[in-house]
Image (cartoon, rainbow, N blue to C red; front, side, top):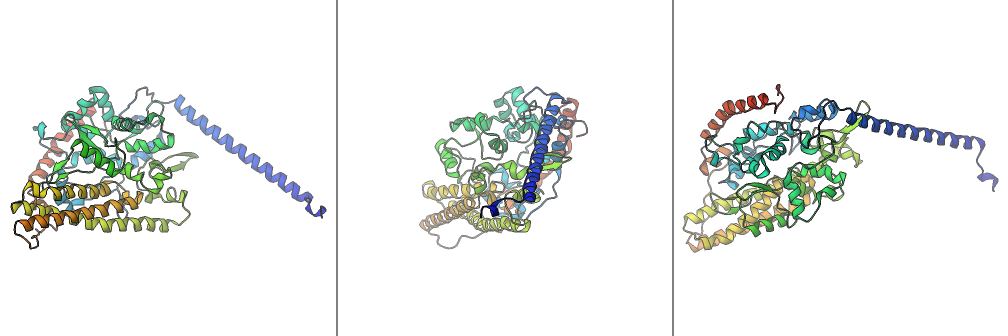
Length: 497
């Protein structure tokens, strides 16, 4: 019996040969890693462009030392990708969803709201939107410099030069010939070491407010935190309009709401209903933490900047975009299903969230119109308070859920919960308004205006868009070229840009 357990001579030699092959392979791997480490060290020791400052706003200066990353970063100018719900193309959302004009009546978002394009377009999209535009001679009517905060590495440079508060509180146009380079290298990387770093004070301040030390974040956490500098909920605090994240009480919708309520903050008073409205920005980071990927430690960069190999070099693809464009390098790194199955799973979640979004959006718009009708019938402040608070809560939940880029995939359960709550508050607001109307002798259905197109909805809330668009065209044709010429002359922008 023992004889049968002995290896035959050829089996022993086969095992020996296999072991040698494995050892040789490991040796090659170690050699390769050491060689690549040497290559990386060589790059940093022999950089063609030496940088010893915290911020280098000129993105083009990084090209010679980091050509692969730079080349893929340039590709963020490509706006051709589109999926069923999200993409890189510039889409007029108000045209697709005129109810949103009603929801934002009294706020600049009712003038213009288009989907964001790639990082390369950040400056142009900022200049072109009507939301930031005001006649250049009327500084008091302009948005503050805070609006530039996330659009360029020129921003931390300016903060260092003029002071954080001076940057925020200045009229938006004051920095027109300064903020020129789109979102790029030193927004996320220390120029001298290329380590990930936080270049915006708002995130550092938010961590401090929660009693956390952001300097202790791991490298994997930093691969999301550099994105969290901008893809978050924020507001402009105080007379200085300081960019501030409402995280003091936590990072959920309810925590932000409690924070805003505690300081009596309101973004605007609704032009129709007079409700005190909170306008969500884009809480992508907060929402991602509510989903399964965020809970499992998957970073933003894992999916939006997947690794890529070229010429034997492995690097992060800096063409930041939807993971659906590179399923083989994003989803399939962890999931074994085929690409079409994975894409279908994403769309299924997004469709379900969109279904309830549509209902919530419409009910809120109707509630605002009904509230205006109640005011016109003689409703008092005391009578309307309950309905207005329901409108504030309902619209905040809707906006927080839909303003976050990709939230219906990042955290579909949380999005569904928020939209369901928003729909419930919209219904409660309508019931409350109906009771007020009954007190004033009106029990019929409230007549609804025709708001089936963006133009009709804007006309209903009293906007003169023809004049706004004419002023904006003049601004783009005259002021912006002068800004660019000044920036090039002063070396803030590469000449051919």
